[in-house]
Image: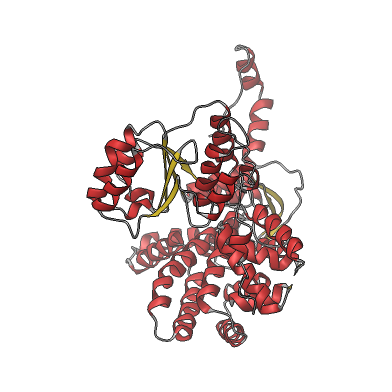
Length: 514
């Protein structure tokens, strides 16, 4: 084994602002400040691990002390004595301090006493305090005055992953920069470039998995890539990464969720056994199921403005499969199974036997998915209560007459909904439904808004009011028929009295039909 091997995260660490990936706003602000001479005396960088906080601090230190120009430069040369010393961590005027091991007030006093002396080899003395939130309260207090009015030759650069633990008095004395999670596409390009430099075969599928597993952290992603290269001897493909991460392929997850939502308990448990026996980590599988539920909710037709879904981790075929699943399940179902899965996360972590816990979770999910909406449960409860209440014999014929309706056209259906005070169902039906065909027991319709719950609600209402089952057939192309509201509006507009009234007022229009 080569004892001089350098891991990828260190070997390809950013050495200048141009190579700092995913932090465009930060780079633009700092380079502009350096070029215009507006250099602050204190900066604080915050963000998740592996996004470039310490790397940015070192690049800024090089920019301030590079010898390639007469003053600070946004493009440090990287080859002068100062740049090479800072890169190696050996520059006498650039001190990197680990706040976790220098937490006390005495440590801070030593730093502040040394800060009074002018730099030896550079233009500035730069103090990089990493994980600054680990300092004690007395140490923070000792830093306050010097941080607010440091000597002209001193620059403080603080870095932390826990910005909320840093006192406000410290934050108010620094320019704050929040380093964002690096986007998946940016990480993929970076990993592909590194694979080329290292002469490693990295497939697109494997690259996608590594970039998403990195969760926005460059260092985490490069550590995973390093591990994958070591495992596969330089031929990194999708299956090897799946095995390494102990994750199931997203196609398997989509098929599994389709089985779970189908209501076949035996098939779902058998599929769970198969995935488990193939080596998948059940905690990761639960995470993937939650990811699926999130994107299925974003893609549900009931949410017409749920944002861009092109950045979802699924292929076009998988997204089409999710849309077909969404066509038969409601938004309420997705919301309920999400809540059950969120509650199962700590259960899985605490369970002695994860497989048993996961099997019970699947059973719960299937029962939750088959539950009717709360509104339907309340409606059924009301119906049962009304049936249990004795009714005088004199009204029995009227009750029997109202219980069994005959509906043969779209208008009769609208009238029946209005008479029974189904206001929400009536409003949606009259405003959004184009009826193509209707007979007693069958409706063929086009839904302009695509509410997946509409067919279920209307079918339940029809079954209750007519006394027999109905078939609701939803078509995908509009028959270009008018809705009930549009029909009523046309009738009003053609009425001579209404036309005469509208002619009396300029730009008059009918805004509603009651």
